[in-house]
Amino acid sequence: MSSNRRGFVLAALSGLLPLFAGCAEANPESERPGEPQTPAPETMTAPRAAQASDAGDVRPAVVFLGNSLTAGLGVDPRDAYPALIQTAIDAAGLEFRVVNAGVSGETTAGGLARIHWVLEQQPAVLLIALGGNDALRGVPAEVVRQNLRGIVDATRQATPDTEIVIAGMIAPPNLGRPYGDAFAAVFPDVAESVGATLVPFLLVGVAADPDLNQPDGIHPTAEGQQVIASTVWAHLEPVLRSLTTDGASRR
Image 1: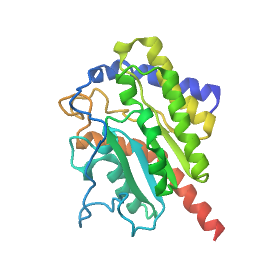
Image 2 (image 1 turned 180 degrees about the horizontal axis):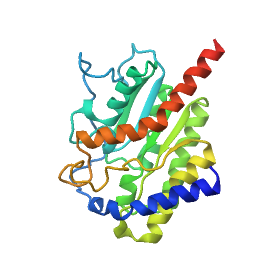
Image 3 (image 1 turned 90 degrees about the horizontal axis):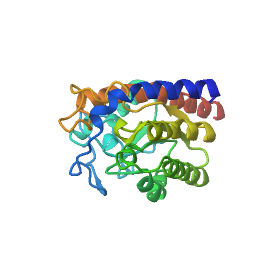
């Protein structure tokens, strides 16, 4: 990422800080570490949401490593954005399966601790959507950076061909502008340094919108999840199409 592009991303994120004010108060009861959400059942109307238990599905995996935003806390699992991404993948005729590895309460440290289990899926793509809980807890930006780099390094060592996508996050403004700026800079910096695709802000268009969030002001409604899915898909689809083209050219 060029310095001009990085500056543009950071400026855009800084402009979103006031809109994120409504998400500044965390509900300690809403996120409990170690409580994964129930996978979506496979039905006629549900997408082919491939979970870790779907051993018969041999399509390359797109793994979403995230927290409650990814797990879909408070909505039907079929309405969580990874399941919606599976619907988009199928509609586009792309042969990939989604694995939702979102766990409520997860931090970047937690993601790093369980990355080796996640990598058992041999992901074609790993999308890292962590950092929101770090921000709510005021985890130093440098620690977040080290954890994200640790996740990427472990992935590159175990599965060198995995494409990595990093979803950006911003800190609530009550933690102060210096922390907010340092925190927001972590995601584009890490993405640039490791050659990953960047989703600049996972919650763009959703954060602080009462119509798109549950009463806690933090977790998106089903409609909010649809907006997240649209944001993610805009960046993920080109990655998947590139993998499909590269795979075809090698056959």
